[in-house]
Image (tube, one colour):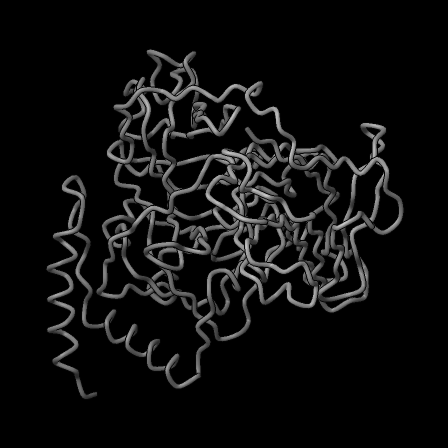
Length: 472
C-alpha cells in the first residue's frame, strides 16, 4: 500500500503542539501508531466517498428518547467530537464526554468504555471519530437524561447499555492527530438545565458555594461514591442554585471548598439517579473564586409589570388579544388546560399521537416595549406530562413584525430559562428563574416554541403558566 509521507510529517507536527497545550499535570498522550493512522485515513476516505455518513452529535442523540430501550446502530454512520473530560484527577471513571465543536458547541454526548486512565489516549481537546455500526445509543442509568454511546446492552437490565470493551475500542474509536483548545461556553445557572447543555463544557460566572458549606471539603467523608455541593449565583431578584458533583476517588476530594466567588468550568451532566443537573470538574484549576459574592436585587424595586398572563380567562385554543397562536407544522395549537394539582388554569401543547409527521407550534406574547424601563426580567412556569421526544424553548425577537407568515424570517434568540424535562416530577411546575431582558431593546416579542418529532409513541406534552415581565 502506498504511504503518505506528508501525512506523517503533519502528524508529528500536530503531536508536538498537542504536548504544548496539555495541562502540566497530565501525561503526554500515547502517540498515534501507523496502524491507527491508516484506520483513521480509511474512515475519512469512506466519509469523503459517501460510503460512511458523518452524523452530528445532535442528530445522533435524536435517535434515542430518554428512558426507552437502547438503540442499536445498524447503518454505516460516524460521529465526530472533541474530548471535554479527563479522568487524570480521578473524577471520571471509564467514560469521557465529547462535544461537536471546540467552541460554542450545540451538543455533547457521553462515551462509556472499559478503559481507565483514558486521558492518556483520549486527552482533553482531542478530536475523535467513532464508527457507530453495531454500537448502542442509550443510557447507563435508564431515564437519567445522559445519552451515551456504549458497546452492548446490559445483561441484568435490557433498558441500559454497558461499556465499549477494550477489544472494541481499536475498531470503533479513532483519534485524529489534532488536539484543540476547548473554550468553555458561558451559560447562566438558570439556563444550565437546557437539555442541549448536557454533555458540554461550560463556564458559570459569579458563582459561589452555599454559605453553609464553609470549611467543608468537596466530598463528604461519610459518602462512599459521590457528593453534591450546592452552587449559587444571583440572577436578578433571586438566588439560583445547582450542584457540583465530585467523586470520592477524585484527587482533590479532601480539598476545602473555596469561600469566595468567581467562575466554574465544568462538564454538564446529571446525578446518578437523574434527579438533578450537575457540574463535574476535570481539575481544581477549573475553579477560580477570588471575588466577593453577589447580592440579589430587591424584588420591591421592580414595581412595573410589563406583562402578566395566568391563562385564567382562557378556554379552548388560546386566543388572547395581540398574542399569536400559530402552527408552523402539524395540526396542533396551544390550548387552555385545567391544572388539577393547583386548581388553576394553564396552557398546554402536545402532539402525542397527533398523526402529524412533525409539530412546530408557537405561542407568542404581545409586543413588549423595553425602551421606557431600565431593567426587565422575564419569568414563567412549565411542567411536562411525559415530554418524551418533544422540546420546548423560549425565544425573543426584536425584529419580528407581528405577522405569523414572517415568523421564520425574524431573528429569534433562545433565552436561558429552566424548563421542565422528562426527569422532573409529573405535572410539577418548575420556575424558569428570572431571565434578564435588559440586553434587548425596542419592541420585543417572547415566543414559546414547541417542537414534536412526529413519533407516535414518544411525542410529549408541555404545560405553561404565569408568564410575567417585571421592570424598574
